[in-house]
Image 1 (tube, one colour):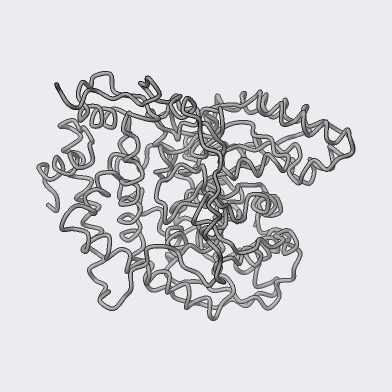
Image 2: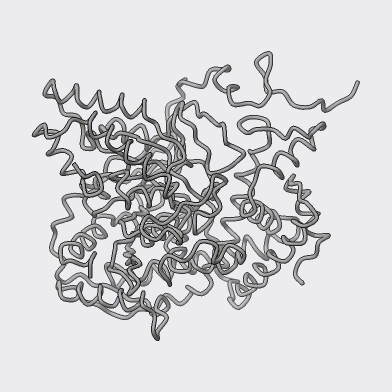
Length: 99
Length: 480
């Protein structure tokens, strides 16, 4: 086993993801299969390979910086429109600090 | 008019000769799409009002003798991961079942400005994660010709809409094959342009170093024309490319004699694969058109799936963190604390595949594992991209099957995620390298299932890719 139910619960906690007991069990099994396949990468010696974080291609130099000008933004009410709970111009969440 | 056979060119001619108006074409498309949808579930939302308004604008412009744009009156389906202002955009997820975006994606703005008519939002795997369209929270899409089979995924809806004639063209998104694979399964043209060629402003992010927007069409010309309209730099997407957009349709009639095509041995199974046999027929046809065909090797192909499923899940776990029950999504009714709000909203809202990818991505990025997984995968990605770079020193294009097999049965792979992942083997490599690639129809198996031929070429060589695809189409390759 590459991954145990305890580890699945730990990772689910990191991801803020509630899983049922049945899901935990299934997840351990599925992730185990996938992680076993992923081990294949260890066959390759990559000691002298530079990591590729983005697609790179030959291109001329370009001016990627724009002028610092004000543009249109979403109005407060528009930005809040899809919120499950909003009020006084803010997103509302359950109380975080008791007082 | 028969929408199922209409091309962009035929629509322009019909409008010019007043055989039909854009309003009539739109009404007929919507009628047919709503009727067909009970069978295929290709659309999640129809945008009747918006479509009729766009059509009216086109008709008014034409009546005044003005240019109504290269896509004037063309009915377009949009994958539901691309944001449309004031029009429900669900991403195939329960979490966004009621999400009404406040703005349009750049690609939508551009195609509407060109006269295109958005008829609806097409079904897809939840957040574009899947290879069969069975991961949609709103039910799977069924293959238009084989209702017991999948249309492919994750852009199953856009592919099916074009194949069944309820859109003339459509927009999908591709992260590891999500345009090319459903295009091949449904027998239509699907294009994944160079990474950065089309702005992703308004494309709901899945894996940012891999996501693309691209067109579906029933012929090469229409795909090239739609790409022409949506391609080009957009200051709202920092990864969009500055490279000028050439005239894609001008490349379609160019001679292919002397073009050098590579066949990578790693993409052919040998033995009795019907898919391979069709692709070999296609390659023979290209040879007959005067192309030179050579065997090549892309030696790191077998590592692509492992590499891809580390990178895409790592990026997905970060991108999907925004669905937290605060800003866009519904919120769990059972949550009373902040922590419960996050955990329960996500636990109740995400489907099984999204959960799996969030978990795998979080695992590979968790403390102590970064070097072993994410960094390792980025290095292997460089090796895979290097394989292509080396190949393109000697060949102009590479030709392969799109998928090892044609459309499979609904439910066939749904319980075996690894088997599902492995079906993406031929499309993932091009995505990792960020090169342009496309699927063109290449006949059918003995059962009548469409087979797709993949054409891959170097960065920004879309003209060369379309040139080859168009020559193949003219020579009768689609029905070979």
